[in-house]
Amino acid sequence: QDEAEMTAFEDLHSRCAALGTRLFTVTRLDEDRALFARVFTSHPVDYPVSGTKPMERDGWYDTTIAGKRTFVANTPSEFAKYFFDHALIVSLGLGSCINVPVVDGGRVLGTVNILAEAEHFTPERLAGYEALVARASQALAAALR
Image 1 (cartoon, rainbow, N blue to C red):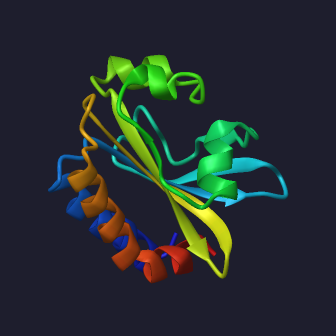
Image 2: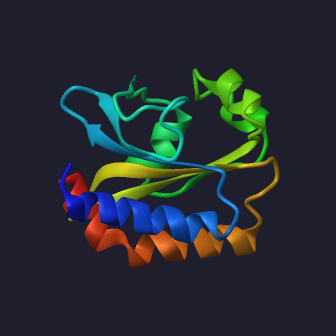
Image 3: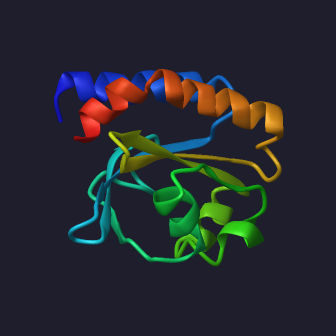
C-alpha cells in the first residue's frame, strides 16, 4: 500500500474513532473472485490486513453490495447470521456494526466496517458516520481501485 492509501484510511479511522468507533476495517471487493480482502485495520492482531472472507449472496449482500446502502446491526443477533466471526466480535466487547459501501461509478469497490458496543448506531450517529465516509469517498475509491 502506498502512503496516500494509508493516509486516507488512517484519517477516516481517526474521525470515526472520535465518534466512538472501537473497531475499524476497510475491505476491498474482488467480485470476480467473490472475495473481500482486508486492506486496513485498527486491530491487526484480531483482524490482520492479510485476512479475506468469501462474498456470500445473502441479505447483507443485498443491502450493501447490490443495494449500495449501509448495513446496520445494533445487536449481535442482527449480524450473527451474516458474519462467521460473530463470536470473536462479541468477545472483543462489540455488539453493533455498520458496513458502508464505497461506490465509484456505480460499482461497489469495498466497504468501510465500523464496530462499537451494542446499540451504538443511533440515527444521529449513523448520519455522522455516513457523512464522514461520504466526505472521504474520493480518497477511498482511489485507494480501493
